Amino acid sequence: MNSVHPVGGNTAHLTTLGLLTKYWEPGQVKTRLARDIGMLAASKLHQNFVLYLCQSLATVSDRREICLAPFTRAQCVRSALETERLAGAWEIAPQDNGDLGRRMARWFEKSLATPLVSNAVLIGSDCPLISPQMINQASRSLERSDAVVGPAKDGGYYLIGFNNSLPSNVRQSVFENISWSTENVLDQTRLRLRELGLTWNELETMEDIDTISELDRFCSELAASSTTGESQTSDQARRQKLLSEIQSILLT
Image 1 (cartoon, helix red, strand yellow):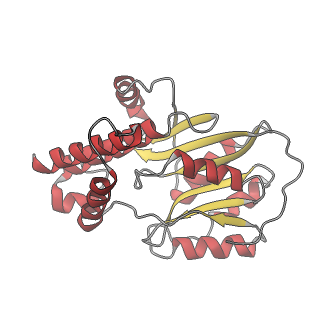
Image 2 (spheres, rainbow, N blue to C red):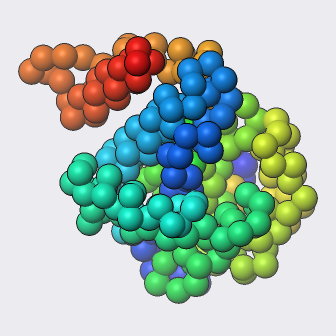
């Protein structure tokens, strides 16, 4: 952990959670996995990951938003949310143009445009087991830190968040001069935070599910944490359902 300091001048405590993701179009998502399981199976897997996150995080934070690309598929996502009884839990907004850094920076700029929001947290859809507890931990850490990061094992990150006390241009600078989609993203981001004089906390490290070996490990983790019968919790039931859906996808 890095040293932190109290953040003053912010009396609001509203939080916004964003899910940055693509629509589950075959050939446009999970392309590395698609080499081993096929484009259709990879797209179905991505759809399951997105909807799993929407379900498990449906009550966390004060506002939840799917930041979608392409936005022309918004109605398809709304229909999927309605099927899962999640239509009222998530708003859907378009991603901005540009590279990943530009899109993330613009989301934070819009989400933190009002002083009523004290912090915002943005996640991706490659780590389906991001939990409400982790989002709450991230939000709490932003009460005393400028930023929060969730490291990924591949050298990137699955979560990033900012306190609203930071000027917009400072937040934007965090996303500049980063070699996106490489193993250097996390180290370069840490360097940028340090250069800008920001304080930040880091959550537990998680693994993105982008390759067949990562998917195998993920399924083993789901199997180990799932139970059946009357003693099953709602979280365990969701994990068991996700595992069953993944197995079904891989068998077709």
